[in-house]
Image (tube, rainbow, N blue to C red; front, side):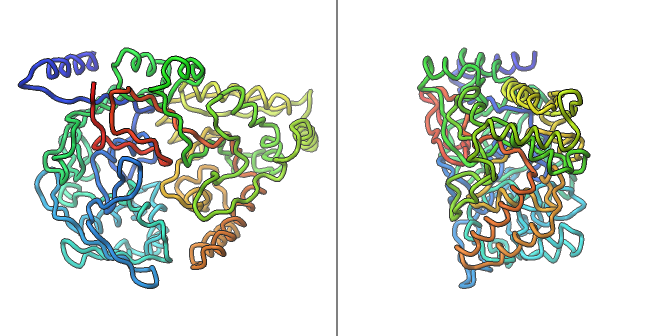
Length: 521
């Protein structure tokens, strides 16, 4: 009922010259967990927050870093000290954005009391890791406001990817005066104060989030969309139906069962582009018998990735035998899972032999639970996985739950096998490999290997790019040999965009801020 009422209001606005508004309706996949950047970790949530907040750097229409809250910056010769000069701009309530707002936000993110699962994304900053571990106070963080317009950031080690990293949600500033007054309720519509192109007007859970243009945004003169509605559309079939009748101007994901029809009938609206993303099955290493490497190896062997990507999904995605996608900058690749060159029949035979060694066979099946999102595409993939595992005497029970519930179960370790995906925050192999650090918030399976952590630490301290890459290769090789995940496929974007939506630029990070879009019907 509320959605129909909102749609009616939009139609009235469009029909009345006095109230003419340009409205963009976006199908955004799963419902978001929060509007607070410290409590989100999904690309659907990042899309919303990226319309409302701007970090020191932001992204252009093609997902590339450009000046944001900072207009310029400089780096010390050793690459450890970065000085950012902030533009003169204000929060949506008119208060000035200051360097201290960044200091406050980053300390809050890293404070263990906040419980931000994504805090490790800023461990590149001096003392950040120790703060997350509770060994140092947040005030020890290597970030300092020299004055209202100057921020100095000191790093643990040189990081050429820092400009990309600073476009991420975890690096956004927060309005200190509002967060201090409202606590975690600061991010609710009515309380929310941002420095981006939009502010939230309304959030009806599981229905829509409405953003309206922020007239105080520093580049408001070039923002052409007045209202952005984000709709949760994890049911891709329903999303496609709404897209076809123009109730949605953009939609993600697409129903994979319709890919041939979409290619044939809507090629101008279909946007399939390779980007730095991996889909994998997370294994809960703390649940017997999944703590047995023989079982994890057997599960990996029995997954026919080529059949999944080429015959079932047919998107053009590549089967995944590594954790780091191809095309990542300054990374030669680890070669992948040891069995990748074996014919599938031989892989299956090895998997069955391993299961026999563990006492399983035709008369004694292993029962496991696979949890996935309550969404047609993911349920279809789960069914394919279930069928493949029967060949090695593993009976899979599939549980499909709402995305927020699934995220909580994964984070808390309440699962056997779980659907997972990762999309690069910045173009570096460490962004994928850091997921398996023993104390990383997104290390769902609780992989705990001190040797692996030491390799990543050594790589971060290594100034020579070639030597650093080799250390990262060794780390990936170690995790692959431990069979900590079941890599499935390297992702391709799944976007439907109406031809009248202009300014949409396909890019490897799949970032499409509403401020760059306009409608030309």
